[in-house]
Image (cartoon, rainbow, N blue to C red):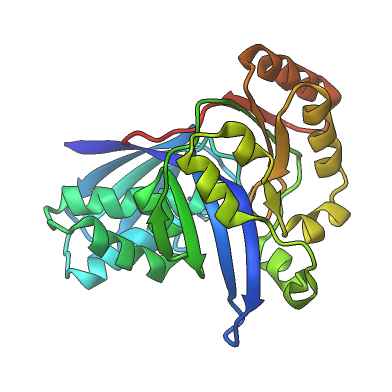
Amino acid sequence: MGITLRAYGKVNLGLDVLRRLENGYHEVKMIMQTVDLYDLLTFEKLDGAGVEIHSSQPDLPVGEDNIIYKACGLMMSEYGLTGGVKVTLEKNIPVAAGMAGGSTDAAAALTAMNSLYDLGLSQKELLELGVKIGADVPYCVMQGTALSEGIGEQLTALAPMPECTMVIAKPPVGVSTKWVYQNLKASELSDHPDIDGMVDALKAGDLRGVTDRMANVLETVTIPAHREIAQIKDIMLENGAMNSLMSGSGPTVFGIYDDADAAEQTAEKLKASGLANQVYVTLPYNGKR
Ligand code: ATP
């Protein structure tokens, strides 16, 4: 008997970096939003030890470099599990794109191992395990609309994103999160996003208040290296988006629409433009897996 889970991707409605820490990490203040775009993962128990990964995307590693392997391995060592697991991954979330595609697979793996091996761990315990794998993993366990602080592990649930349609477009380049943070001049940032104002706008259910405050300081590093990000943002704005922004360290761009038809039309234009090879029309997601 196996378990199949949806591992949802995210966008950052707002992303601020407060400072670089001594250990090389950065202190962040971000508003995360789960989107209805997901990988499908099936987990089956194996009698022998080990983690066997079968991926629909041939470019992804299937050994210990896959973050799913790390998550399952962590559960095995922490809880002395002797059995193994076979994982089948159907990858839909763009890779190396700023949508937490890897982190969300890891979060699904923690959740699945908890049920498969009847470990009875609480969400709090899963969050604590998650941060050992990656800073965004705890958020991916939690999902929904959240304020993320510290290195990403201090989470506060927020009022859900008001109803809207989203267009997501990824140019055909991968961006390394590590490279972006290494090249960020955190102490020289003059414009900081109004994250507190966005929290208030979410509380008030004010979509315009949210979109007016969309900003991401990592654009200062990624856009100069990949001009197509700015071009995609412009196409979204010229075609009815309330606002558009790069997600995470990029290069994925998302636009927020209060008009679903305008979102569909923009997606068609983006596909025809050749600027993006992965284009989706989706919704914010605030439900369960
Ligand atoms: P984040 O938004 O958390 O920065 P990202 O979208 O920038 O994430 P990922 O898609 O998580 O980046 O992938 C980053 C790298 O991790 C890729 O180069 C990929 O080869 C590797 N990787 C390992 N396991 C996975 C996985 N299960 N899914 C996606 N990428 C994986």
